[in-house]
Length: 110
Image (cartoon, rainbow, N blue to C red):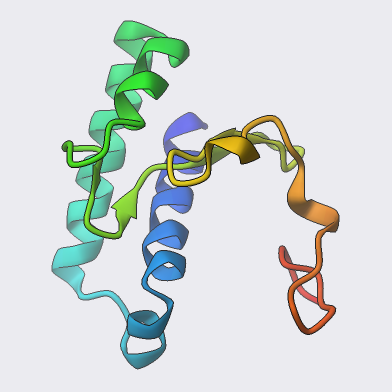
């Protein structure tokens, strides 16, 4: 389950953090494979070191876990932010009711 959550988060994070790029093209198969590999390694780290220690590692910029516009972030099944190294103040919040600049909910369909 954690692998699925992290994988989805990594894919979405890649697309959202490079919004201009994402509007121009979809991720290549190589990019998708790279993200999948990153998430598999991340899940293994969580299993061996525990969530707290692993999340600390995931938050290190210019590491295997966070480079360029690719980084891991995680939400629980209720939409609570568990990890967001690019916006650590978001950890512990639940953005599901937030709206974007156009007044639409920022998560899920409008």
